[in-house]
Length: 478
Image 1 (cartoon, rainbow, N blue to C red):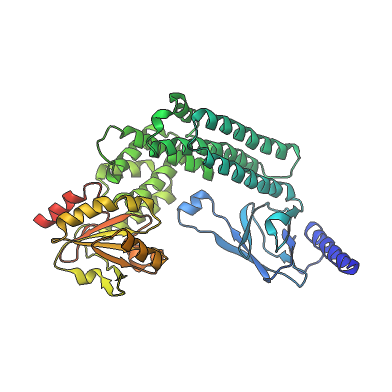
Image 2 (spheres, rainbow, N blue to C red):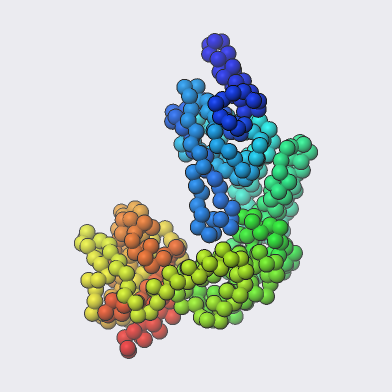
């Protein structure tokens, strides 16, 4: 036992010396990343480069940066050259977000049998990464408590929020007083993360009460607290928490301005107002450009290719970043394939008896299509209104509901239990289905209207609870 302990100790010392000294490893640059995985079953781990929010929204996903291989003792060295930034070290299903600094070293150690509990860092980048680990644990704990208090009186929630902000601030102060070696942009970004993470908790609390129709129970001063949070902070324009807060705040302001509209507010009513809010409330150019692109891209998902010209003009005017402008134009061009009159991409699935059904089989009548899933709350909210339409127009219209549930039995049970009518079909490829890609479906429910000849009437049709009946009447009278 002592011999094995000494061998492991010596191996660990060698690793530490290797990544902090100039031992000859056969590599022509200083090693930046190494470590040891005890009791490893797999022989390798993957290091991923984490995209910035700007890179992510422009379609750059988390990409493999390096693959490190373990020796028999679980030791590894990476020969990659790391720029400063965020990465993810992934072993099996265990992911460790890490911050790499150009020219500095990081050593990762954990026991594969209990990785979360045994994760430790060493090297000249130890302190920033230990801080990230502590902050993630703290945020997880705060988030869980915040979720449990969403229905609580605002005095209780705000007391909790004040305590949470102090804990987050203390976490940052302790990191600074620990005299770490780090890039100043790292500290600035983490300060923004702490501030806007707490701000998002407040926003979630208010949105919860608005959704539950209990917002009138809140004190007016609670909602006014949002006005004190800076949404024109271009110094944070590449911070995920900040951008999430601004986007949610814009949506909340838009919804507030539509409160006096009778009935359920529909996406086609919300979208133009969102861009009016962006136009009037956002002054920071980077933030305004990002939001215009992010919410402009989202608008196509809400209302399809038929965004009116005045809204398009506002979006284009406010996207001042060339990369965003080019990406928006590309998105707009792609959606034009789904404009009225174009041939509708085919939709395939199997019905409850296992029979193959496709959209191309249903010519002769207009078709109203509902893309949904049993786990989707908003989808199920539309079912009562959809049943009313089916009862009224079932002889003249094909009503097709296609589920993208991954669990077919769950879909079958729900169809039977809820006595769903119309043509009920299921596509086992779910989000990977060809029609999901062709119709650019990023969220559900999604409704599509096709004419009797198989041409598109509306690729993002009104919901049953909205103006679907008007569209159906129009299709039958043409």
